[in-house]
Length: 308
Ligand code: CP
Ligand code: NVA
Image (cartoon, rainbow, N blue to C red; front, side, top):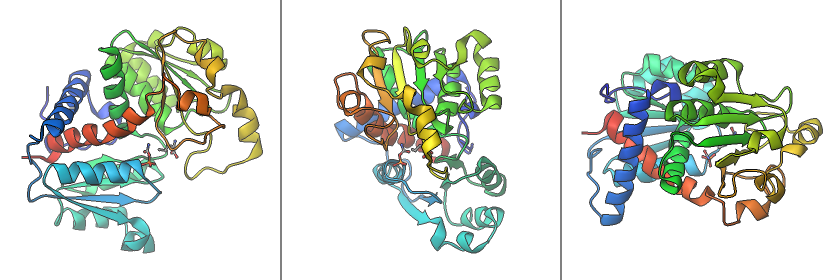
């Protein structure tokens, strides 16, 4: 495994299979040591800037908590209150922040913005969600699946709904983990074509499928995942809702999957829209563990990228 220290994490594809498994092992280790009160304070004396151009509950609080547990200082920054919001370039912001802090996370719109920040910053940059990817979410998701199923390789994950940033990162994450990925999306709402091609090149074409029938997508799936129909920055309209209506994750769709299938959602959920209360609050739901594991996975990531 290459050393992760000093590296950026902008896409799931920034990790190879061994590195992904090392991050997941470290995440399990962090979770255990936190419970035992034995966390290694590897960010002692270090500062992590967390920049948000979009709202956030889980990502912001889980990163702040992770940095705190590792002994560091989190600096959560709303982009509209920075000069960034008045037109200072991302590159200049990256150069300046690198003089003060030891890692930077950015949640923003265009994926090129995290790439630009990573090019200009001399400290590790972490993608805290862009329109293209949400890789930190998928680290926590894979950790959660492994906790419940005991393994990743050989499992089948179905993603139903809008082929968005979370779907893109899941396709890559599954490919790296040896899981098959099937997206069930309406025509025009498929995951990013280049990301799907990349996932196929990593795992083999038969492991990554995009279909238009939600029942076909979930047939035999061990994990059924969905996310909002309108992501941050997208226009909510009636056509979207009409087009996505048949992809709602309800008890009936879940029953077309493996009998032991787990239901996942990155949250926030639009209850009754892309997922029903019955599924979200039901016995197969893993959503609260997913949310908790954001903190453990990100602590492990920060430790490996920027810790002592
Ligand atoms: N899942 C997730 O990233 O949630 P937030 O938007 O609340 O950070
Ligand atoms: N796809 C959603 C994920 C939110 C965590 C969005 O981008 O708004």
